[in-house]
Image 1: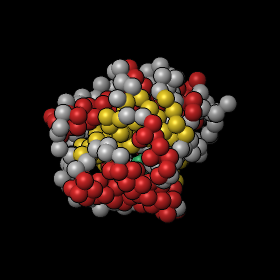
Image 2 (image 1 turned 120 degrees about the vertical axis):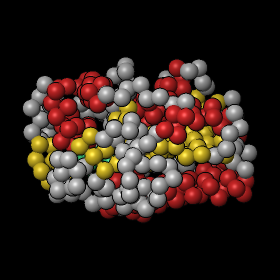
Image 3 (image 1 turned 90 degrees about the vertical axis):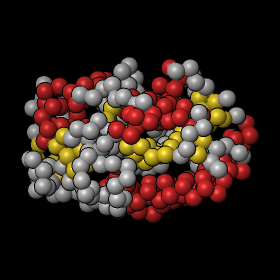
Image 4 (image 1 turned 90 degrees about the horizontal axis):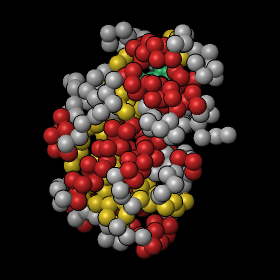
Length: 329
Ligand code: UDP
């Protein structure tokens, strides 16, 4: 039986496929290639091009292949974009998940692990953030992910399907091989943007706000290596296969870095001065997001292996230096 990875040509999806295949799993990928890249598809995975909003596509896939679990990454995930195009997020993230769930229920597939986000919390009341803390998203992206979690909750009560929701903090870094990595077009994430400067593609980094209530006034985030996130998905699939109940887990290192600290670390790693300029705040950005991942460590046995910011940025730099245009030629 195979594992179906929806969105397996995207950033976190492709890294999870690499880890799954290394662990000996049989992997099928479905991706509409709107934000993912065919070049990121592992050569040992079976690939189907299609959209999760297309029920006939999913129904056919569930008839053609036999799946023991689904891992669902197929969503839009940019905070800034979600504030200017909210309906795109409702359509892909929520309508897509609704169609997927309909097809899974009809085809008797009852285990799913899916991508959620720290953005479900909004402005936290206390740090580090626990899974039981209040969820009041400050952006459309986080709101659609929270609504997805709720959809899973009610569908699981009615139809017996079990799920694990993984609330990622800031995914970053690249595969150890340097063969796959982060590639968004246009890019909006901090670390790839910073690395565009030493790559000669940008003069300076804009720092979105230096008047937050943090140690240097810039936003604090918990940066977690994409390979550590990938490992958590494998553990979550095993957790469901053992018959455990549906659950929600935070995934982060539990350490926060300001935007200025990330830029300074990138200067050290790349040996480039990387000029920074202060710009206005970006809509929807909470000041501080740091995870407590104690629950994932205790229940799933998860242990992040690549927890130094220098190592994370060095792995991203290895990828971006050798692939300045990402997967594009
Ligand atoms: N950020 C920044 N300049 C950029 C891109 C991002 O100052 O060019 C900041 C952003 O405001 C946030 C942090 O870097 O505080 C991480 O942003 P990113 O988009 O990487 O991830 P997010 O936290 O939105 O998931």
